[in-house]
Length: 233
Image (cartoon, rainbow, N blue to C red; front, side, top):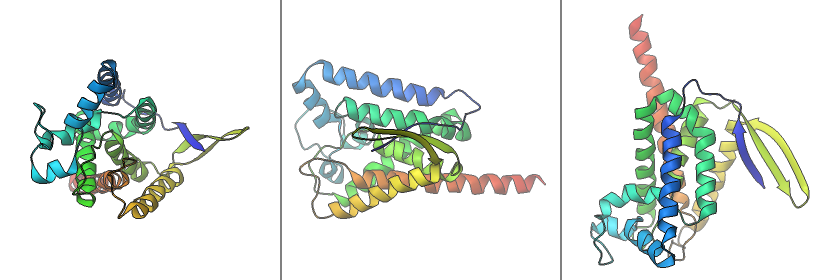
């Protein structure tokens, strides 16, 4: 198994927004699990994204919770378990600081939130009849990975490899690591077609949608900056 744990790409500014998002996600997780399984289930059903609710813009379950539109945002701050939370926040910490450095703090926040929304919409398009709540920051973080791939393809990422008793640490270019990651998402997304999300599992198309949103938007930002710089001459 491969596990990236840091990169050699220091940022020029402190990642205030990245750190704040990690703290917020962690705080929300412990609040939702503090009340026990019943309270956690209530949070997931009422604040997770349920595709069929979003399609019809009405709550499937009778509750005082928010309108399905706002679940596009609330769902990205919920996590299924501690491993889900730690995995997402670790990736955000490794790759988020450099993207925040490039975009600026406020623009990065908008980028992150929009990435989560784009991911949720793509998932809904591929699973319009699903009643299974979707939660997690994976879609937004996938957008960060897409941005990082385009901005820093040659940055070296330290990877921990372990298999039974074999443990190795080595580095690889971000382009290879993230490229392998998105290839894995696409293969699993295609394989999952027709199966649906009724039995739970990974929202592969949320990851794919978030990733390509991040890739496209950063490409647009780069072109805009190049155009602006040419005008300066």
